[in-house]
Image (cartoon, rainbow, N blue to C red; front, top):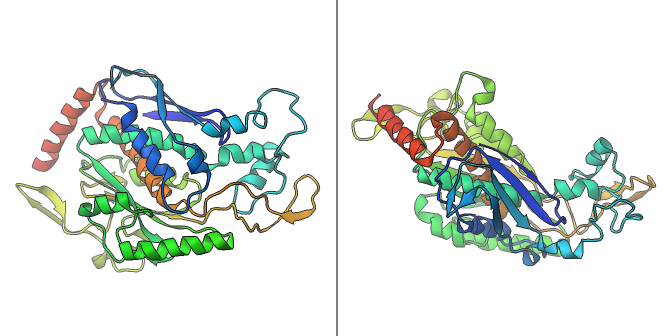
Length: 383
């Protein structure tokens, strides 16, 4: 499965083409729109989330509620486009540009992107570098999740730590409703209260906040990915996708960073087997991946999200046209996007996993893939 997306933050729409999906996958807008709504939610979001109410439209590849096997075309309209039509006009001769941005924001793509592509109006950089593009990737991830669910896989994304405030309630799958109804997608109501207070303080100070994200997947078969070549290792493929999320600056599988300080006897997961369960581990410090492959245990992916780079009390910068000192530009922004980023992490990891399933099991129809996955599960259990 492969896809490309296009679109700017304030352009008319976001677009994607997804190729490689099997025919016969049940699919409707209702499989995608709840994901888009979750991505727009969370305490600390800005006014843009009140303007947009993201909905997906399938322009090709779905008929009668089923994928056809042809490329799938997705569209998400930007409702704010009507206010930016003149500013974002693609026609030639639109000078001087309105709302030109010439003072780059520290921590953003503005300056380096301007140097790379030769732009002096840095809006030509920020419009695509904006995290708005993740709306379409979440839509693609929702479709990947739909495929995974047909193959017996389920997932959750949540926030274990926010602005340095860690949840004291360990994750369990029984807490899914708590996470989904939490304003900050945490398992701990007491930590949530403290986080909301921290967000309010940051808003008053014109500041922003980051946090830690976690996505979990269970029901995966062992053997997705491979140890035979570096670019087939699933942990590397997941890490690349996760690091492509705007503002993510670190990623780990399982207890990766914690394990670095421990002896091997306290790190590796002992192997057991019985006739009912087949092969299993006594613990899951590896986070479900060993040697670039899923091992059948729960996949645990964590990421560190830095605070948003657009500050209402901006940092020092330099104008790229006049080369005079200036405060960094201020664009409409959130205080934090940590809860939304946990949804993005879950969706984008699902894309990698769906691709790995299609790579391993092939098949032009969903029924073919299901039959092959079922046969492989039996073989793995009996090995």
